[in-house]
Every structure is written in structure tokens, then in C-alpha cells.
Amino acid sequence: MPPASATRSKRTADDPTQEFFGGLAARGHEPLLESASGSIRFDLTDGKRVDHWVVRLKKGAVAVSQKDGRADATVTTDRAFFDRLTQGRENVMAATLRGVVNVKGDLGLMLTFQRIFPGPPGSQRRARTAARRSR
Image (tube, rainbow, N blue to C red):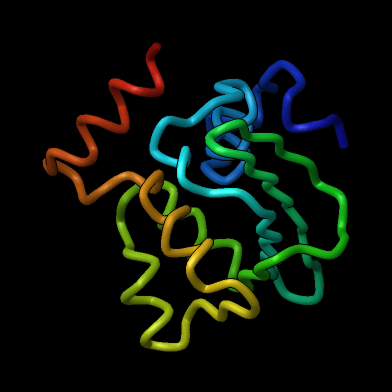
């Protein structure tokens, strides 16, 4: 599979997770993550298949890969659920409390990272996220 920083494929229009991570990699710097340094691995399950996405943060600088490896925090959830997170249809903290999302390691890093998920449709946070992505 091509790296997340590669040109978006036709598939991204139908793949919210690929679009989310691809957009994050393309930005390269995320002001909402300037207080964070560390790595988060997302293990997204789909039946027996597990897709890995690793986000490395250094004071707002962002790098994304699909390599499996060690990270400061590991987030595990269902791929379809993560798609809904990236669309603002679910909230990661509420999902963590319900046990739908499992976070191991640096919970504080995940708390900071959650800022970049879009809010629910019609929210101010969703509008700010859209504006940031269009820059």
C-alpha cells in the first residue's frame, strides 16, 4: 500500500479513515497538536484483518505511516467505528468510556490528539476543522 503522504487515490472518497490520515500527513503541521510529542498507533480491526496507522508528533509536526511498531499509545477499535470518528459522527472519549475504543499507554497523548477529530455535524468544532483542512 502506498504511504499515507502519497497522492490520494480514488479510494479515499469512499474511505474516511484513509482520507483522515492522508489529510493529516499532507498538512505536516497541526497547530492543535503543538503541545504534543510522542507516537500513537491505531490498530483498526475488520474481522481478522488489522490495519495499523502510526502518527508521530513533535510539537505540532506530524508524520503518518502504516507500519506496525512500538508507540507511546495504542488505540484499538473497529475500522467502521473509526470511520465514524473521522466523520464527527462519534466521540472518541465517550467511546473509550463505553469500551468501544481501547487505549493503552499514554492516555494524555490520546486526549490531546482527540482535538483534531471533527465535531458533530453543525458544530463550531467541525467548521474549524474544515477550515484548517482547506488551508
